[in-house]
Length: 501
Ligand code: NAD
Image (cartoon, rainbow, N blue to C red; front, side, top):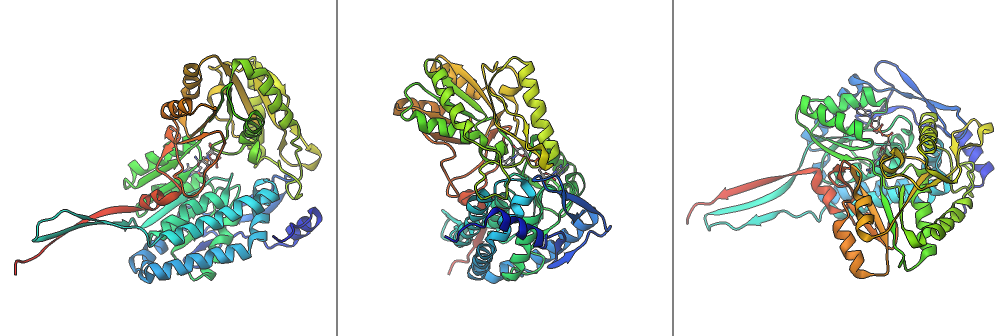
């Protein structure tokens, strides 16, 4: 592997890099029709990185029109599986060649550590693109039992124009979870990235054109959620909205679909995921690492963050000491420093929201085990160090609501039944985990935990081959795996009646 650039090399590269700022519509790089832009603030130092085209209804309409035209004239589907595969593989190759730039853009936009962007986010985005390139000719239809005079079969037909609306925590990775399977099924896409983190999506669209993706097949329109996002959600010629983001916006998208053309909606929303540690945990040190990094990875801005730690009473005190000890080793650092493992919050707004939640938890009587708060203020950036609470009352906001920041709420329990009741006592159902040496207990708990992802004796231990998505108010529809391909298609049942000889 190539050595990672040093902090000063990264700072120099960041200063000299041409930062993407134009929409990509119908194969062209365009300013917003209105000429409007928005300031893209870098969380590392609070300074404006660049100004980006602020797309609105007119730009969305142009992008949807281009996407529809591209779908109808079959310029993409018409390449056939081999041709489409070649283009998506070429895109993955170009992303790989561009890895350092994509990682730098992601780091500047989000404040995540450059080492995570370089070793995790961008490689996973490339891997996702490759995986769906490989999978696209492995989608089979069905032949139904038919009389001799009829052939009945069902095929997966692409939906048409997919509107993808994505969040800022893993910007390119979340975008590729939607763009890659949607394209693999032959659709056209209009992607609206989060306003905090548009740059890697814009860069990827440029690479897609270089890879030979025909113009209009993938359009990226940056802009505010309430303008560009809402225009996409309400557009009458969009067949589906694939969304990752917050619950309130998910609800707004369902309303927009109902009020417009009944477009399909898939929602990947937030979570308040529990990690349960039973006294028979086979490896308390590994569990402490998982309890800590399960919630503090990516500054806690992870939808599957293990934000609730449930520990069996006899080991609760000793186990929490281990978790606190691991958390104390986390140094909040400059995102551009390759040694940093914990960087900045994405925005001043996000930072302020998390600080409010810490103050609220203290006011509600939770005990502070690790007192985090704003740090590195001299940089002008948006940094918060990890915070750990225990003795969290189950009815309080900290126990029930998502923080989306580096705050761990620890609760203890006496029995397995109590652990499961606590774990399920939330409107969310994204992920859950448990640590136990008992296979019987593991199987019982897996069956009873209300979550789309369940991990035993490990956290976040799965990848692209497994479906990803939630139960309850964590949303519906799945990203990743072959299931995601079916999300971007409809079943078409065909019956051909034959004439007797
Ligand atoms: P958000 O819902 O505010 O924004 C997500 C996207 O929706 C952005 O692109 C935004 O511009 C757009 N948007 C905002 N308002 C809109 C509107 N009225 N109409 C259409 N689009 C609109 O969420 P966020 O702050 O970007 O991300 C944080 C949230 O996302 C957290 O709640 C987190 O749990 C969730 N999340 C979930 C997953 C998952 O896979 N389940 C992954 C990442 C983040």
